[in-house]
Image 1 (cartoon, rainbow, N blue to C red):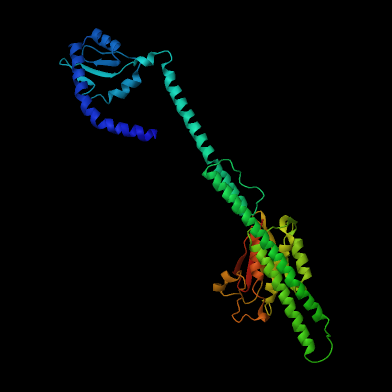
Image 2: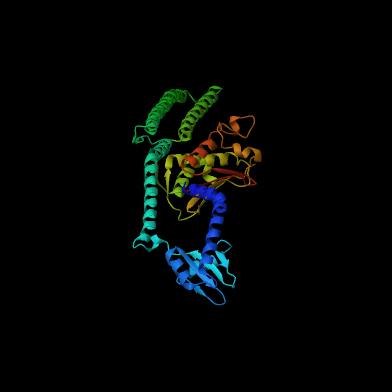
Length: 401
């Protein structure tokens, strides 16, 4: 505002002020030079310099004098700018140059303090205005911090209500919205638990009854029993995967992190899978421990190994799982040597219910939730799941920090 005001005033005065002041100053300079005489009288020049707030400098063949020899800086400034306004040449060849002199308030004992006091007051006003504006905008900072907390699923600390104006009303409405969202999330969690219990219990009873059926004898009964048990097992796994994917897909998924040796965890999972006995484990020594949810990471490793084993039938060598330290973390990489995947299908492998086989036969794979769960587990830990063709085979890797 100050710069705009000063610039506007300067522009306004510079257009008409020069034309109005130039004839007055020119006539006044002519009268002063005439009063000094020819050649210029030093006594008169000294009297003028002492009476008026101007300085006088005379250069010529006879007289060379200046009224303020202690101000060389001001004279150097005006020497190159002296024109018909401030410079006159007498008939005998002397040049009289007028410049700034001593302004009366500059000689006052505390005259120089006024400028510093004014500057200090301006700075004080600026700081006070900034503090007042910050106080006005402080509720916005509280609202931003509260929105970030609510986005992370932390609802225990509401936004403080510091004012009773529109911003205070907005903060109260956001607190009400957060309370409603928390109630909906709690209801969703309760529904998931109820669904898990209500679906798993009849499936468990059906599987138990099927296992009690006689397995001996000839004919189609044993085959039907085995097929029924297999279907019940797939339904159980499907329900578990669906519930787990729903939990992990929520931005409020709670991880039970604990310090984990990822290499030891991989060995445990591989030992629990009889089909993974031939998997080549390349686990580096001295890997750092990581804060991981052991149950979710076990699910990820198991699904990656199961997927690699499924597509390694008839491959030239068994799948490989490697761990190595990279960029302050641990890089997990699983590779098979199977046929690989078409490049246009790579970006869809981690989508739910997506399978590369167009016929969607159970014999060639599951329901398409394994890689999707792996992606969700990695993202819940702040990592990413990268899938690429290794030629031959498929490579899946993820960096854990």
